Length: 471
Image 1: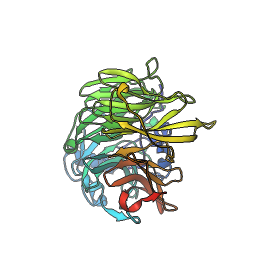
Image 2: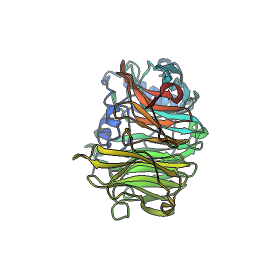
Image 3: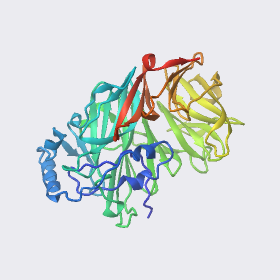
């Protein structure tokens, strides 16, 4: 059986409550494609505390079963209130926190003019996983592991919070990282990527047992979509996908959720997964009109767009929904399309020409836009600027397009007049390249503290104060 698993995890961190064995994230993370996860993962490292007394695991099991105080509460300074999630198959377990605010302090400190960052937390090493904007609030998920192994050492905490200080959810899975074990220990349980909008959050959980040699004997993906308010309670999956529906070794990446729809890129299968309620379907894949690798997916209501990426060949926009097959939305006879983004009012993308021999850079890049439509025949493209200097990805909001720059700066383009504004990244600041969200007045990136590579952080930049006009 295949042992390589493709799913998004960003922190080789360890924590243990209830579970007594975990699995090393390195095996799974090594398989994730080039969107920067590996760069972040490499900043998080620690060693296994082999002297952990197994009696603490038993005490924690009993405490959770009896709904009493977790033995680690004294170390954490609070009691997360861990409870088991229902319907996790094969006798495996993921815990949710009734008191998730215990696990993340959402406070913001200055990092320069017009710059705020999430305050560090001496209890944890951590990395930022995902981010999105909803109703003018920024939302983000962080993967945490206990920094001081004197107390606990296995497992991984995933926290979902927003910029207004609320911590909406925390989950404890069985990806051990620094203190965990490998796939040869018998099982792997992992909370995957997350995304949201319109008050809803979508995420996935992987659960599988192994044969003791790294191969999977059971392999399950559980799909969740729920209102934010339900995340502190036991929630059931909408859909469970087992082989052959999702072949062994495949994982869900780059999750999006609207009020109606959940989507994810499934790799290395190279298909888009669409879920609505208890229904699900594939878009793209071999033999379809869009047979190449899906990347940079965007969800607007029921409609999902993605880049149909053929390595060494064309990159074009594809789209589809629960009721239609995937089809080509826009392609160029002499160029590639990158940086796809939409806020439901507009679409924006980068048209790139004359790639180098490796296909890593282009001689000419242009930013284009159009009013939003799901009908390819109705698309009205308009050139914004021929002087685009960003990278291959971006975020769109309220007629503004933001991308991480080629000089490790941040670039903001007005779709109205093509003007450019820039934030000059201070030397040594480890920020980007992932744009977490674009709000009405700020841009947020993932980052790492230069003084402590184990402290992943969220960096918020005021467009009015941190950016300056580019002549």
